[in-house]
Length: 128
Length: 127
Image (cartoon, rainbow over all chains, first blue to last red; front, side):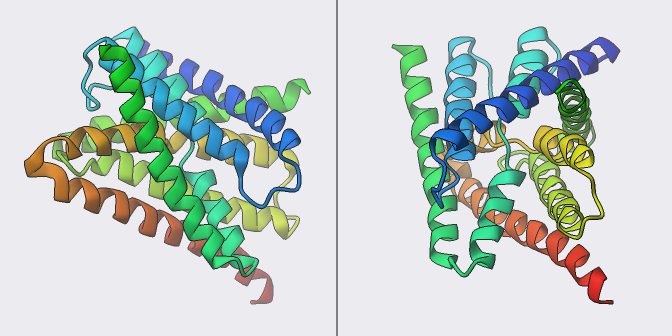
């Protein structure tokens, strides 16, 4: 780890966050009126697929997250910045706050299950 | 449009660096339960709840939300590393249970942190 490595993570995190912001806006525009948070869901599932695909392709373990440009810039930076755990949780809190507790639980469980399926698919495709 | 873009970029970049610092500081203690990712996610959930509550009370501007909410909290927290880490550890039979615990603890404590953050700022108005 050195200063350049931290700069790669920062640059990637900035780019990934801009992607999340703009892609989220576009998807939520299409899904206007939906009580399910489609934008955050699609972003998290596609990010899960990409991290699994790239890691499996390059034979990088999940704990290998910095020290070279691909790990720092792409995996920890761009994909970490692109996906979000906090927005998913705040979405669930807002659903429950509106009295839709069941929807909040379904949203969290569906995101985790779809994320796992995306990871399995990504690993399988990279090894195919 | 240029200012929100800069704010989201800077906030997201700083958030990702904070997450890497968590990895550098806490990573050595984590095996099947990655405390670094867990801590970064829970911290971001609490902060996001806090700043969202402030925004609802008109005490945080739209630009503050771009910097802290969309940028910093989104950049600090990660779903991709969370779910890929959980999957990878669950593939090792000896780590399966701990990996399931990691997923459940992240969901429950992350949710509680976001709720607490939101409550803390909404309640401050009535105090």
